[in-house]
Length: 305
Image (cartoon, rainbow, N blue to C red; front, side):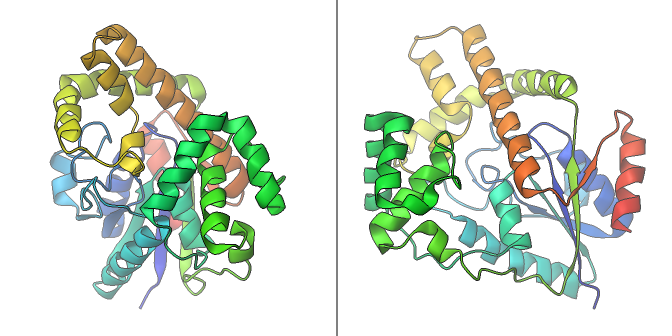
């Protein structure tokens, strides 16, 4: 049995889904989601979940499968993805894992530590502390209880800093002690790694265009429905770009144009973080791009063949 896996990453709005579908057509493949927001059932529009005529022709896995009311970790994703990968391989399909969540890809290429699940009460208290102190004072407090964090997590990386804090608070061990001897479950697999390295100016245009499309597709109604579910504020679904901004618009605090611009700004910042992650964690990936889609497809097929 062939054990080839294709990993396809890139910043948000870079065209990953389109490329994945064409790869699946050419390689008898199926697509597995590696985007932490497209996993949620209730967010089709704001998460830009791929839904069109092409997606119906190719089997897609792990899209819209988890309730926004549930906690879903990178470990949970890895368990689900591993099952889908092996299911694809058994049926002689090529698994194409596509998304923008770098941590998910890390679990495939480097493995994941066996940190016990952190309860919502602990996670909530850490996030409350972070909001109270701000990122600089919070980071200083984190260093006091976990000096191993220094030079490994940046003060501005609020998500990882909070994660490190909750881990040592709950387990009495540093996050980095847990990651010692971690290894990938896919050592014996042939992994092809592609990162769409789209130029910044082109990406900015795509982001603005996508934001307009979201509003055309009634993303405001989607946020209203989400609000009615009263989701615990500590859960990740609350962090989806657009939720906070649309709620500000609904309250009358900002205009529609301001709402759209804030979403564009937040999305651009997110794309920048994704590119920064790639420079640090995806150094040995194939960085590919062409404005001509057919050329990009040919380049990608050459790498994965």
